[in-house]
Length: 352
Ligand code: NAD
Ligand code: MN
Image (cartoon, rainbow, N blue to C red; front, side):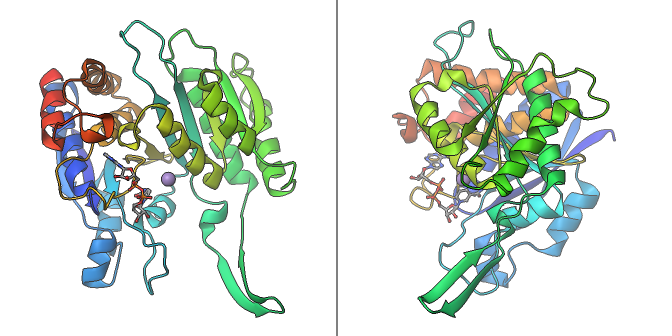
C-alpha cells in the first residue's frame, strides 16, 4: 500500500493525553516514511459505561480490514467485577492474534556513545497463561472456593520462543552479548512452566533453524530470583522471555529501574499486525491535568515503526526522546520536572 493506515485507540484516562504525542511524533517524520493516515477508533471502559460495550465490532473490523497497524492508549479495568465488561486490550490481543508483547526497558546513558546501565527487552507471551480468564467460584467445604485455569500450549510457547530468539539475534545493543533468559517457576509448576521452558529451549533445534541462533547464549531463571537479580544487577539481562503473568510483572518492575512507567513502551505483535501501546495504565490519579508523560507512547510509536521495518523513522523518534530525557530540561512531574505533556511532545517533535 502507498499509505500507512494507523488505527488510533486512545481508550481511557491519560490514553487521550499521550496518544496525540505519538501521532505528532509520527507526523514529524514527514517523507521518511510513507504517507500516513490516522483512523480514530473507539474502545475502553468510558465507552462501555456509555454504551454497554467495551470493544465495538466496528473497531475490530476497521483494524482488521482498513489498518496496517495501530496505537493503543490505555484502558481502565476496574478490579471489582462489572457485569458485561471485559478488557478491550486483552480481547484485541486475542482477536488480532498479537501473541507477543515486546517491552524494551532501556536507561538513557549520559552520552549517546556510552552503554546504558539497563538495556533489556521483556518478551511476554500475550494470549494464554492465567489471562485466559477461565475463573470459577463454588461453595466448598471451606466456604467460597475460587479457581483459575492456567493454560500453556506448545504452539504458543514455541512462537513466543522463536520471537525471543529472533529479537536476541537482531536487536541493536551497545557492546552487548546476545543473551536470552527463560523465566519460569518449573520447580513448583513442573507441568505448565515445564512445558514453556522445554519448548523455548528447543527452538534452536527446530527444523530450518540451522545454527542461526548459535551466537545467542541461553540461560534460565526462576521468576522470583529473576526479580531479585533484576534489581541488583540489571546489566546481566538482555532478552527475557516469559509466560504472560510473569512477563507482565517483570516488565512493570523493570520500569522502576529507568525512573518511571511513563517511559516504557511496548508493542503487541503478531505475524500480520502490530499495535504500539505504552506499558502504563490509564493513571486516573493524574488524568485530565496535562501532566502525563507522553514518552512511553512516543517510544511505542517508534517501536511499532521499527517492527514494520521503518528503522530510520524509529531511530529518529527514539533519538529525539533520548535527547529530551538526557538534557533533563523538559520533563513531566513523574521524572521530577515541571513541564506539561504537550510541552514534552513539542520538544520531541522539534528535535525530530
Ligand atoms: P497505572 O499504570 O495507570 O498507574 C500507576 C502509577 O504510575 C500511577 O501513580 C500513575 O499516575 C503513574 N503513571 C502511569 N503512567 C504514567 C505516565 N505516562 N506519566 C506519569 N505517571 C504515570 O496503573 P494502575 O494505577 O495500577 O491502574 C490504573 C488503571 O489502569 C486500572 O484501571 C488498570 O486496570 C489500568 N491498567 C491498564 C493497562 C493497559 O491499558 N494495558 C495497564 C495497567 C493498568
Ligand atoms: Mn502491567
